[in-house]
Length: 460
Image (cartoon, rainbow, N blue to C red; front, side, top):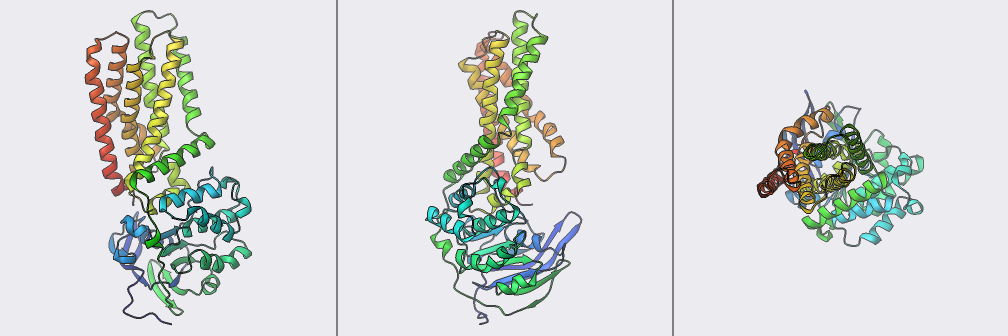
């Protein structure tokens, strides 16, 4: 049955123009889906299918035009994203988490009320119940695609945007697609891209053709159903709860992957040993000066090395899209990444305090120096987390990050050196208060800048 003309669309695009680089990828695309309708976007490679879905999900800021989700809200509003499910070209999965852990993290970010039961039902529906505790890195590409579909539909969204949901699935998986959609999101409005019109017909979808960034035609009959009430049942988490969920996820991933901390610790230990060997004959206050220099250069380099990959890893895995589509304030993503970097940097700095105290026989391990390391790690991490988020799409980010990090980090290093020299009684201890104040001001300023700027920079 054709939907009534009076029915408000579940999702609509009006005259969308999206420019990437020097080319308009979308050229005035207008599209509307009735509640419960399924629409397949078909077109050749480069037609703009992925860009259209990303624009509708709010991951790309259009040059012209607008997108409206249920309730007439734009995709930048967390309330609108509460009813949105998104499967990108790469499933938003963390390889060092199990399938169940990936779904549990998504359930926390989307505020799925009956999370445990919903997760088990989703795993069973996509045929992964027996492999639920295996790490995703050990999954085949087809298994990852099934899990990505379960992840996108876990909150039973009102609107589902699926980029080639049949990609990498075997014949059985493609045949199971209608069943999976019907079971996990029976009342959702679904817009998906595909190269195979047989998939569109199997899902009972109206076919829209996209060529050279323009809608060129449509076939099939539009059908409507009851809109999903998942947005009403969902309870997106509070800001602090969402930030904590992301920190806990990052800590678990780091513990299993061991991509950062062991390398940084080895680097600091080698730096301490090398300088100990080079300055073994140096006596008195010069030893203190060497120790202080090694300490703060180690803190800066450790933070820079970790910060370079802070957002880049999420971007390369495709998991950053999953975070941005979740119904949480994007500034929470920045704060969670900052917290992880600050913890890693402080841990490395305190370890270096211990190494240098033992190797150079200098009493660096004091309350004031520990406090200085923690506060300086906070300030440097606020600077680097902001920079990492802003250059995540830059091709030369590995070169840009050190160049961008050093100028604003100079006052942090000066303050750290001043506090440490005061603790070693090389300079008057009374100056430490001013240095601590400077570190606190820098930390507050860059944390505020990151919290304000990241939501604007997150969407290209």
